[in-house]
Image (tube, rainbow, N blue to C red; front, side):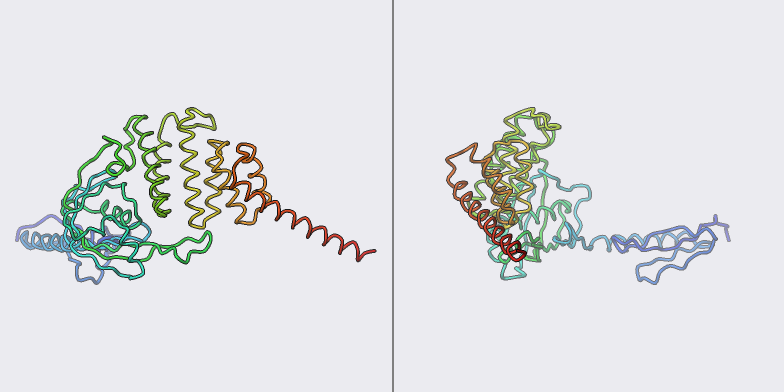
Length: 376
């Protein structure tokens, strides 16, 4: 028999992502561990084997890899989006932020009837039975559609996947409590195409996603302004969380501008004012969602860029008042009324704050009288 070169024995180890068994070398002592007991493991012999047999074993291993890679589970975005690949797509052809994606939803099942109103607000799932749907990554205005974007970013063109999306039910939300999304809808999605898209116009409905980093300063500013206007429209519809995401997107765009404020030095007043407005609007969304602590943080950011922002002062006062920080609320309202003495909402709230402070002073005086009166 012809002598073949010595082949180093291998240990078959499991890959945690795909369940495929991969080669690993022996340990330093020279001992060779046995392969794990798994139906997909393939033992490769070391010596005196016919070339055809070795080639056949390698062929079987490749088949196992192909089968296991075709159907795998992926948990995305802190386990709030689940994706199971049913058939693979074209490797390398994957959408990214700002891509225009066309896809088909073959089936959609509502997993929880209490989330029916969430599905109705979704632009995608309200029309999924009409055929091919096109969306631009980053432009979605509902929680469910944003979750679907996360799944699309993990798909290849021509891929077919089963996706489970989660949404939040805020009807029983407690103050400053995080509301975790729950599985809401299960669907089968086929990604047909994904084309690159850049900022070419400023139509709010078609191109209100984040501008590319390579866009010029003027386009970025106009896009941030469009995000703000879109957020205001959503806020008027009482879609406070969706509006928050729009305001946040606009603020992020402004932070990429070279003329943004650096080290507390105001470089461009127009940009600074818009950024302050966006932060103040985000704070109002947090107040509507009963998150006063978060609202205070955003108001402080707003006032850092525009100390005379009356709305930010008022919203921070409201948040402080709701948290029981009466003295802070009083201080903020006094400053606000210096800038805008005719602000009726601030005057009404300030009267309530002063009444509360007076009641505190009266209670303190009565307590002191009781204490020192008993010591006489």
